[in-house]
Structure formats: structure tokens, C-alpha cells
Length: 313
Ligand code: AHG
Ligand code: MN
Ligand code: MN
Image (cartoon, rainbow, N blue to C red; front, side, top):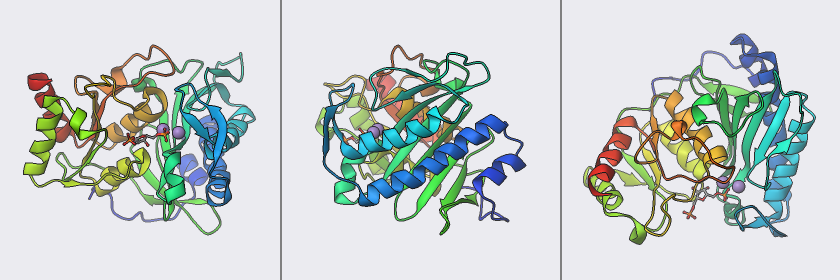
């Protein structure tokens, strides 16, 4: 468990951002995204679980919920007055909101990650990365904020603006109250979330997973990136991996709106996020559809993964 205990005071998200002197426009943007989550929750709980009859940039069949969640979030961002450009998992190109992008923010988001899990009632989430200014094709180390909203038994919002990682929970008024401040990861973990097919692991990844099992780590994998990362973060001990595979050298997860925001959060919590051969946040995106392998969580576990991969591939 991280160092931070229960917080001393209940504070809603907007007030918390004000009290920590966050930039007013960034506060507005974060609160717009938080507000949008109320409508996404409603669409998850009552919406159509069918297909939208369209596919996204990756040729993946879009679910009605993917498209609806994207529309809900995009509308809020378009009308916020503080957004320059948008990248969404559900859109094939960068959306220019305002040509005058000085002083504004650019946003990369996955409106509903793990959407295919909704019909089996497993937890899903929204993932958001925020840059200052016009550009979204920047290394993740340029992010000024990252957040995710986890639609689970409770709805929680985990946020960092570069001053630590904090958890908020939605209350009965559908407002977010601060639950935990400055969440920290231990150096070594005791759970692991191994994505991808095991029989396609390379020798180095296979050896790393066997190392984790031999030290007694327990397998915890739901198939949802947001709940799987949230478990590592909130338990403060663990590693998530979706590695390079024999037939997929870049793994599966998308850099701009899945890996970079989570890497920002995990590093802010004292953890690490690596492709297995280098820092996720240092990757220069070539396009909005970049993917990368990922080992993310306790820093000593990530370093061990890099060791095995350097030695065995
Ligand atoms: P999305 O639903 O946005 O396409 O993302 C799903 C991702 C991520 O949530 C999860 O970690 C991964 O897919 C699971 O992939 P596998 O089903 O191959 O394990
Ligand atoms: Mn996703
Ligand atoms: Mn998605």
C-alpha cells in the first residue's frame, strides 16, 4: 500500500485544483472531462451494447458505446474554449478545434478503454493525456496532466498535474471527492498483469514472467487496461505488461492515449514505464496510431524486465 493514508479533508475536484493553484484553464478542462464522465456512466449503464456498424483507424469494429462515449467527451472539449487539438482512439485523424492554439491545451484520449468488457459487466475506463499548446505528437514527457476515470463498482478518477497522483471518488451527488493524495508505489511488487498470448512471448519476456512467478507474485489480469493499472497503483505493488510478441513487435497498446497517460501517472507515483528497452515517455510518436510494448509499475520490477529483455530478447 502507498504511503498516503486517507485524506484529512473531503474536497471536490474543482476546489482541490483551486487550492493547489492549478492553472484556471487546465482546471476547467479537467472538470469538463470529469463532468463528461457522468454521461459516459449513464451510457454504460443503459446504453446499447451492440456494434456501431463502423470501424476505427485500427480496423477494429466500433461498439455503439465507443462512439457514444467519444461523442460525449468530444462535445465537452469542443465547447470548453480551452482546447486546440484532439486525438481520439475513435477518430482517424487529429481534430483541430481552434487554429489559435496559443495558451490552449491539446488532448489525447481513449473514451472507453476495454469497451468489449461492458457486455460481461467488467470494469472499463476513460484515459486522457493533456498537453499545453497545439501539438499532440510529442513525447509523453511533455504531458502537463493525465487522468483516468474507472467505471467499476465505484466510479473513481485518478489524476496528476505533475504534483503527485491523487484519487477522487464519485459521491451520491455525482461529484468527485478527494480520497487519497500522493499515491506512491513500492519499489518491488507482488502482483503481475500479463497481457498478450503467453505462447507468443519472446524468451526474455517468458523468463521475466517465470521470475515473477518464482518470487511468488500473483497473477491479476482483467483484460481492462484501466482497472489493471488501477490495481497496481492503488495496491502500490505490481507490474502490468503488454509486451512485444513474436508476431507483434510493438505489442498492442496505443502510445498517445493509452500508454503515455498511464506512464505519466505511474512515474508521478514513483514507478516506471518502459517499452522493455527504454522509457515510454521518451518515445517520439510518428503518428496517432503508434503502438508500443509496455512494462509499467514498480520500478525495480520494470528494471528486471529490461534486464531479461536485454539479455534474451
Ligand atoms: P480498447 O478497448 O480501447 O481497444 O483497449 C483494450 C486494451 C486494453 O484495455 C487491455 O489492456 C488490452 O486491450 C487487452 O488486450 P487482450 O484482450 O489482447 O488481452
Ligand atoms: Mn483502449
Ligand atoms: Mn477504447
